[in-house]
Image (cartoon, rainbow, N blue to C red):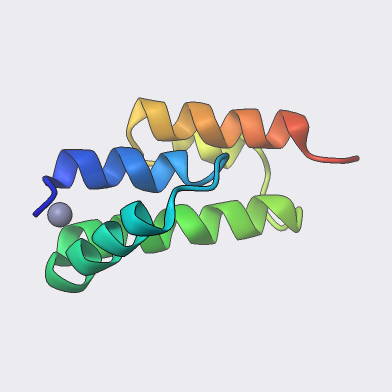
Length: 83
Ligand SMILES: [Zn+2]
């Protein structure tokens, strides 16, 4: 069983890299059992979708109550976003 810390790290890593299938499965199993991580993962995915569709301002990423590492990754995504 992965720790919540590992899972949240992997969830934010999955924003900019493709995780190996086995890792994704482990994360998925954890998300099924852990409400906290499931909420976190959903929020990260929503933010990413909103950012990529331009529905929210990039600044909202900075204000979001997300771990610093996750915000950093979202900011990187924004920078790399095709104009
Ligand atoms: Zn958890």
